[in-house]
Length: 166
Image (cartoon, rainbow, N blue to C red; front, side, top):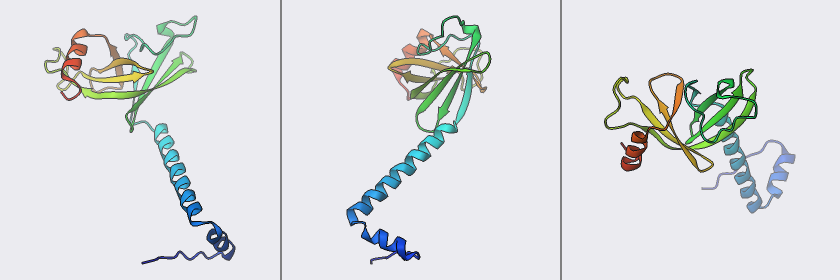
C-alpha cells in the first residue's frame, strides 16, 4: 500500500517532489541524526544525579589543581548521566569553573560481599569511572549527595576478582 502525503502549499509540494528519492532518504537520515544529537546533548544538560566530593577526600587523579590553589580552595561536583557517563566540574571558592572532564562509568553499584562495619545496609557502594584511561573508584558511603575517592586495596582486590556483577 503506497501512502502519499498531501502537502497543502503547492510550492513546497513541487520542491519536495523535485528532490530525487535518494536525496529524500539522505535528508531524512540527516534530520534523524540531528534530532538524536539534540536529544543526547539535552540529556547531558540534565544529570540523573549530582554529588559533591567530600572535603576530606583526595582529588581524582585526572583533576589538576591550578598553581597557587590547594585542595581546600576547590570543590568538585560529579554528575551521573543517563548514558553510562559521568561529568566532573572543578570550581574555586567563588564558584568559578576551573576544569571540566567527562568519564565513562565502567561499573556501577559494586558492593563488597563482606562490607566494612558501621555502614547502613547496602552501603558502601562503589562505581569505577575511567577518564582518559585512568580509573578511579568512587565510594558512596550512604544515601547522600556526597562521594569519596577510595584507595582501599581490599575494595580494588575484590572488584578485580569478582567484577562488577557482585
